[in-house]
Length: 259
Ligand code: PGA
Image (cartoon, rainbow, N blue to C red; front, side, top):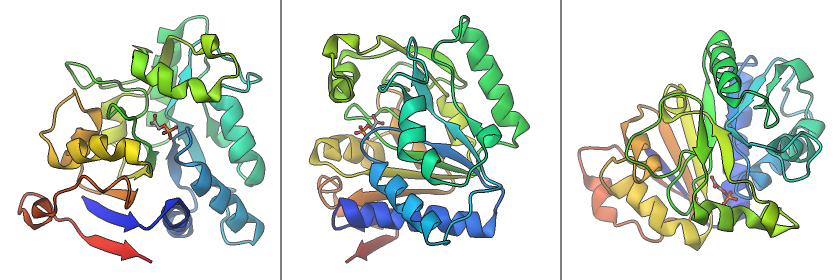
């Protein structure tokens, strides 16, 4: 696991966008796994800026988002569909047919899960997966549980996640109780994973994920088993890490200071 410590949100976002842009240059047909939430907003802004300057060409890229609320359609401002077009896709030259999103209004959400998994497989799997992390250690909407879910599935959102995500809803009572999320198995099959975290509220989850045991009660801890993952953290999000682990033989951490 590679660890990059950025001094603040802006540097974290720049670092993340630079890595994505580098991937696109190396592989213009990149299959990119995307996350929503406050964390990747700065990264998406940087990518849109890069595209404007002619530094990032998404014309051959494909994207798959991680999750969607059940019951929210594309026109709903709180849906992840709306979020993605508003904050990223409208500013890139990505083809509509290469954008893959879960349908929160699907009549049969289980069938929607199967359709999505097949589409990911058909695209050859995810090359680079961008992740945020919940305060409870969730990745995508894979909430803490007794097992690591493998494929796309319906999730009952935890009270904590609903409370934290209420910031995206004008009417707090509208926060959905369920979502569809790709599974941990699908995430772990990505060739490369990039997890971002910037707030001090994430510090405990980050410490547990990196230095704690691998366990489904902290879903992000599974990333310790991924052969190619990078965490780009602000100093605030990394403040709980005990450096003794960097010397451990178990993982090869490369600590980089971004100034
Ligand atoms: P946030 O959410 O970026 O809004 O903090 C991250 C997540 O829940 O995965």
